Length: 345
View 1 (cartoon, rainbow, N blue to C red):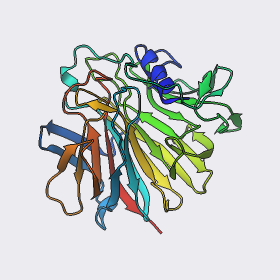
View 2: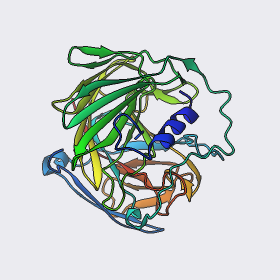
View 3: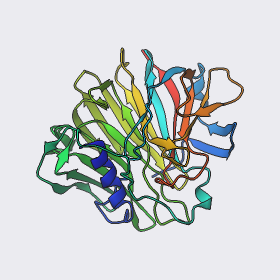
View 4: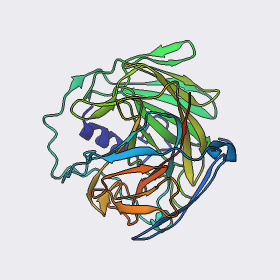
């Protein structure tokens, strides 16, 4: 699916996220992230985590900005690459923006002004929707679209059941007798989106930035070439086997009205390529899914901040990408955090 097709799907369905299978979009809190006051020059955060995770000190990873300017609000022009020769585990969080409590009217409609996607690759398919797994508390839905920018050939397994040809996976959980979509994955190109449960005063919240997990490569745009996917409902985990070798597991650690935390583990290090990436959109600071970055270095006594398009490169133990001002594009979409990088043998 072209980038524009992905955006049309997200924007067209986020008005009714409680409906099963529509939209793009348990447990005690293991980590708690409090993003307090976000101002023009600083982002203050307090992270509470088990001491064992940082016994040897946090591991720093390289973050490089490969973003390009655009006037199209439906193009992922933001690209932050995370690389490390030693990382085997880390945490990704999606948290509501600091201004979430001030949102009265959410803006989620697509904006295709200044967009030309006529040259995007197109692989045709027969559209369908399938319920892959369902209980009273959990549901995994698969979709095949009429077209996608890469062929949908990745098999998706849940127990003995195998589905192929899917372009989108949606994970739903139950909250207060309502079904909430909290995580999506596009098997053909490895793009993920995550969001917390909606704030108390909103009936839903939007998806925004995407992230990539695994050996990231580029052919027209960044992607991860996945060989097959297995979902384990008991642990709420996705296992990814990569065409370039190796595997990763993404586990839903906790989701609530403040944030969603995802624990990522690799069976080996990812060498010579980014092990993760952030993809987002920036046109202006008030027309963006991510407009600023903040990062913490090993031993750093304060967060450093920059406009996302001005950021260059840094070695970080924590990275935040989000917005300090409300955006006219996906106003309620979450900020993203990459943290708790851990190495291994």
